[in-house]
Length: 290
Ligand code: CAA
Image 1: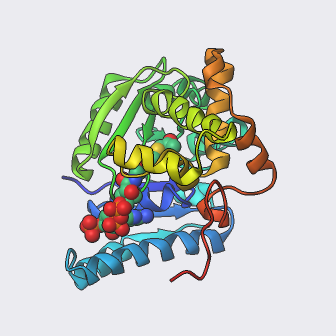
Image 2: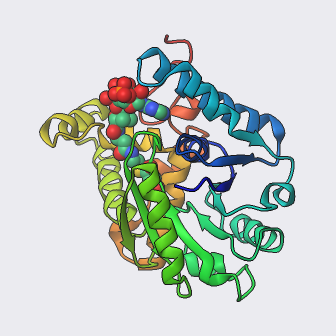
């Protein structure tokens, strides 16, 4: 494996995990957030994950220190993109924000660099359209799953102009990360969210109509289907705002009623109850429970 220089834009829930696994695979990682304090919070989360791995005896203290040394915070997209081999964008699901970022990355990154997006539902072709035509063969979807250090899958999405060489490089990187690749066409929600979101939405509608309690719906999936998490706790874990935005993309793009976001989801998001990250969603997550 040759060490690459990787810029990760957005080091929140997904991005910090992407930065961690890239550094664990030996790559040199730059972390970018518009606010430095958020970038520091992302690196703190990585440090916490690594400390847990050291405590469990899965990682040596020296290895952990080496991984952290390979991660630096950069002050701007332009500074971060200088000399990179790969950028992975993991900012929130807003097409305009992503397109703006891709235009800046395209202008600042070397010609050979691959620009990947971790979008969970937005069209890769439309995001690639923010870059110059000569870059578009090197724009690709590289969709990770949360928690990134644990979930061994990457969904690879080719836009209309993504090249075979780009797909081959993403496959090589996924191999280095120990992740299995599946390839999806560039359609709303790709493969996994196309399957997952109707399941989460139907569980929410069942809850809304009082079919069962949140606990019983989740227990039904955990014990009856052997899922690691029930659908309502999984939605809380992903983030209810994230689920809502993915369901909207699916509903608008595929125009089928079963993709419509349930009322209860919209109400919770409007009330600021976004799941685990705000302490309340379909379930409550007391902040000082430990
Ligand atoms: N970061 C890093 N590691 C974590 C972690 C995190 N946030 N959470 C858990 N882990 C690790 C633990 O350290 C532990 O590692 P070891 O076994 O090596 O000690 C391992 O994961 C298992 O953790 P726990 O024993 O604490 O808990 P668990 O057995 O209940 O597993 C879980 C936790 C892995 C999150 C499991 O509940 C699970 O698989 N849930 C479903 C997750 C899922 O479906 N993710 C996909 C969401 S969809 C998505 O991400 C895409 C999208 O576009 C919306």
